[in-house]
Amino acid sequence: MSLLLDAQGLVAGWEQPATRPFDFSVEAGEVVGLTGPNGVGKSTVLAVFAGRATRFAGRLELAPGLRLALQTQDVPPLLGLPVSARELLALTGATPDGLPPWLGERLDLRLDRLSGGQRHYLALWAILQAPADLVLLDEPTNNLDAAGVAHLTVHLRERAKTGAGIVVVSHDAAFVADVCDRVVVLGASDVA
Amino acid sequence: MWHELFLIPFLTGLVLAVLLPLLGCYLRLRDEWLAALAYSHVAAAGALLALVAALPPALGGLGAATVVGAGKRFFARRLAGGASYALLLLGGWAVAVLVAANQPSAERLGHALFDGQLYFADSLQLWLVSLFAGVALLVLRLLSQHLLLAHLYPDFFRVRGLQAWPIQSGFDVLAALALALATMSLGVMGAFALVFIPPWLAFRRAANWRKGLLLAVLIGVLAYVAAFLGALVLDQPFGPMLALVLITVGLVIA
Image (cartoon, rainbow over all chains, first blue to last red):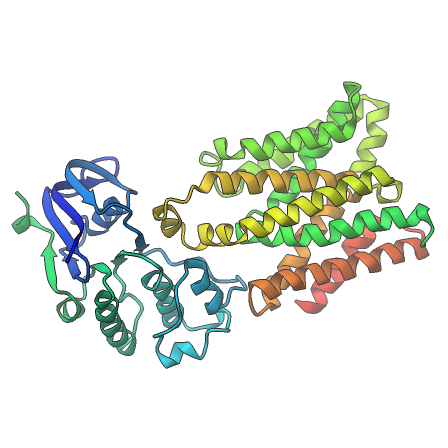
């Protein structure tokens, strides 16, 4: 397997450092969990990987030509917009193949006519299935019911089998245990 | 009505009745519908200032709108939440009224710009509007996916290495120029009615984005034709007729 992302002694933050130094790596076909208490800087770490936040110290290397996809906790502002699920997926280049039946049959409906959970899953799917080598997911199980979490768990494993690397930030311990090959815990025990 | 005296104004307005609702859909997508009023007022002020300076008013209107559209990104961060458009609207209105109040010739043009002067559109204006609309529709088609993606997934947009500012600034200039051209013929409120009401209704009713664009254009064109004919038959000014037709359609559909 090839290394997609390698961080050594990384300190991430916005205006000032928000994490302690930590090591992190992801290989192709691997699902890596990133957990830890609230406020430890998990989302900021994803933001640094995506080039949005600041690297204050350490080394961060991405594979040349790496295509990233980033899902944040911000909900796409879809209410009041006449955008169908099919159009949303087309925007990011995501395929609807593999969607659960309870969403596959609603592709031509407006997203603001779907339930909050259905809308969230489609918005997540648009990123998860976008053409990318490394997918960064921030709390993907938020607003999902048990069926949604179960489907996401299976699908993340399938997505990884296609060669994509996946980083999952989540506070859902059971989900992380089910889906991840490795888990890195950000916190006092993991910092130098 | 098919006499050239009416045909050229009719066709000029018809082109704008296609372009403005489409443009309004993207302004509404970006929560920037107030920009329509702001750019129109700035264009009116620019036209009046040009008149006072013995320059072609159309040049002044287009120039002022272009400068504001292109410069918006430099102060957008400090004036978020539509504040920039509110300030531009008030500034444009204040300058226009002050210039009109102190120059008799500017007063006449000021009334024409705010009330609309579609019936005075000549063939040069028709060509200018048609040419611009052709380019604008092409540019909107090219920008459409990027504008949607940048609005719905700004982080994904950035992480893909796509530059937001050329797309946003390009759209801002396009909108400013379109509103300036529309203000010269339809007037401030006529242009605003076509930018605001058809997209508002289309967003409520359409099943998807593509159908929303089509519905907005359909509403805009039908309302425009009805207003033009109504204004001719009843011998009324066009701008208020257009606004009333669109308001009526809006209330019925909404």
